[in-house]
Length: 386
Image 1 (cartoon, rainbow, N blue to C red):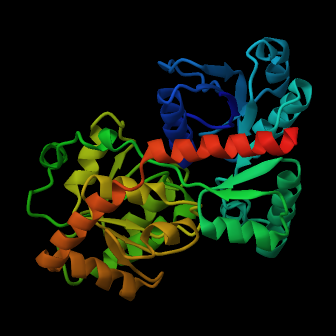
Image 2 (image 1 turned 180 degrees about the vertical axis):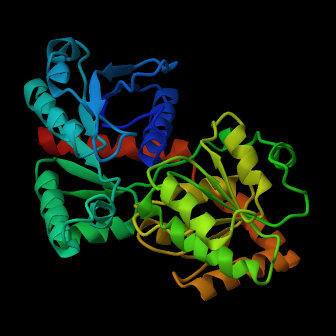
């Protein structure tokens, strides 16, 4: 198949959407399909894979990490894209990409689908705090319902997000399809070397968060947990790997609480072995985001043999709800801390969950998920042609 994807985000912008797009593109290409991706130009020199069209873009005021593509530059590509004889258009984000993808679909007479990656109902309030939360929730629901109605079909990465959209009143056909992982990517990485580089003693207990350092990730709650853990495990170290708009606030909280010796910000880590080494250096991966539509980062941690303690909310419920590869915890400081303590202080339980984590992560094959995506595309085509 020839597939045209459109997204408002992609590497070097690091987040779950970028990771999902890359995983599916690579698996689809390996299976003999052709995938073109339209994505923003971030003004950086990057070595792109083949098949990526970068679009001139401008900064987003409320989130300087992101870019807004210039939609007229996408429209200018219409005739060039027509010659590629695409079978379907797949939209990954609801901003410029959504409207540009719809217009291209009409002009090229192609079916158009989208993946609903982000739970905007919870996400928006972290960036537009001056407006009432109830009003923002209403706007997010109406916005999502309207956009979904424009599409021929939808992919959602978890059963929880499927139910959210059904509750919104979305009637567009929905398919649950999580992002898969290429397990080979997580084989390299030296945890001991990572500890040595960052002056972390081999025996020091380390808990880890990896991801965008953003307010919706609920990292402040994990600082609360760290402060509680310090009472029973004095040398506990909470490593935060990533970058984002909440960094300044979190640094201030760490200083105010006197947690400087118990929290380490290591910034963005490349996925060429550096990130994997960080996962492997940790004893426990911790996560408490309220907005994850999938929770792919939990699978990444497990793929590196690091057991997880996480809340089971929205997409993370599909990943950790069964307790395989980790422990489910409440979003309550004492209860969450006790689950972390169980893994840090129980060698037998930790070994069991490490073994489970590796086996469970292996079931999330990117190849199998890509095959399901192709089947989904073909079903959409059949409905359009029927």
